[in-house]
Structure formats: structure tokens, C-alpha cells
Amino acid sequence: MNETMKTILTRRSIRSFQEKPIPEEDVKQLVDAALHAPSGMGKQTWKFTVVMNREKIQKLAKAIGAALGRDGYDMYQPEVLIIPSNLKESPFGREDNACALENIFLAAHSLGIGSVWINQLQGICDQPEIRAILKEFEIPDDHVVYGMAALGYGDGEPAPKERIGQTAYIR
Ligand SMILES: Cc1cc2nc3c(=O)[nH]c(=O)nc-3n(C[C@H](O)[C@H](O)[C@H](O)COP(=O)(O)O)c2cc1C
Image (tube, rainbow, N blue to C red; front, side, top):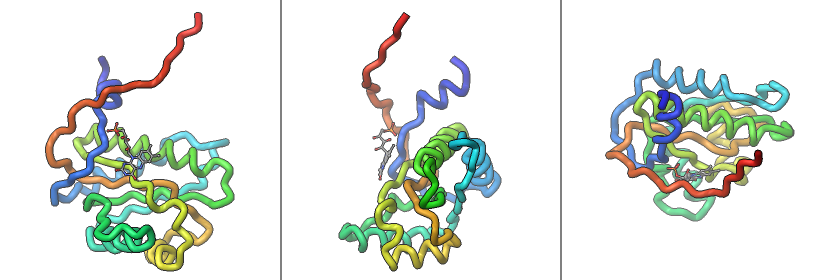
């Protein structure tokens, strides 16, 4: 099996992170992976905001927790949060950003970095307390966030997960 297949088949979501910084050159590789994802009609209307400050990440997590009534929500306390955003009116924004996120997850796994999709922001981006933080993070007002990548070195090895789903081979 080649390395790419191994990376795809062994990636798991990681929800417990060590307090250990990710080297900036690795973070930049993750962003590069995101930028190389496919996008509808090649429009690339996305933006990737990289938050490398645990306090700032926790400020956002706390605001999300308050907005959703989930006291103590901490987004698993990642070291780095990559926030892909996209134009609200982009017809492909959600799909483009999902492709970018998967590239980030696979690239992260290939570098020994754990990751998980954080879904909580979509639907609450325009709540004033949330938008104020997104503004601090220089995310444009006309952008929406569909999902984010929480990143860090995992605490322990996750077990493989059984994969189910219908398949059909028509010959
Ligand atoms: C659209 C989407 C939203 C997700 N949202 C969250 C989330 O908010 N929090 C979380 O812990 N995991 C989230 N996940 C991760 C899934 O729970 C995870 O991928 C799934 O259980 C399969 O496990 P695996 O990633 O280890 O293969 C999300 C995944 C997707 C694709």
C-alpha cells in the first residue's frame, strides 16, 4: 500500500491534545494543503485564518459555548485552529471548504498531527458576540464558516474505526 493510501486509511479524529506547539513550518504546510484542494469552477473564494494562540482559541470556544448553551465548551483545547471561511453567497463555499478541511486533516495526519472537524460555528457566525471575534481574527463580514480544523499532537493512539457504507461495482 502506498503512503497516501496509508495516510487516508489510518486517519482518525483526535479529540484530546497535548500542550505542545506545532512548528510553524508544519502549520504552513497544512495551509498549503488546503490551498491545493479542489474548488467549484476553481473560484477559490475561500480564506484560511490560522489561530496559533491557545487563549484566542479559547476565547472563541467560550463564545461558541455561550451561544449554544454549552457551558465549558473548549473545542478540545487544540494548539492551532484553522478557520476556513468563504463568501456567504458562494454557491460552492460549503463544498470547497469541506475539500480544504479534508486536505488539512490528511496532511496533518501525514505529519503526525491530530485533527478534528469542529462544526459548531455554522449557523451562529452572525451572532454579534461571535462575529466580533471573527472580526478580530480578520475574517470578512461577508464570509461564513462551515467547519474548522482543531489541531494538535494527540494524546494516545485512536483505535481503527469500522467503516460501513454501501458500495456497488457495476460492470
Ligand atoms: C461535517 C462534519 C462535522 C463534524 N463535526 C464534528 C464536531 O463538531 N465535533 C467533533 O468532535 N467531531 C466532528 N466531526 C468528526 C466526526 O465525528 C468523525 O469524522 C466521525 O465520527 C468519524 O470518525 P473519524 O474521523 O475518526 O474517522 C465532524 C465530521 C464531519 C464530516
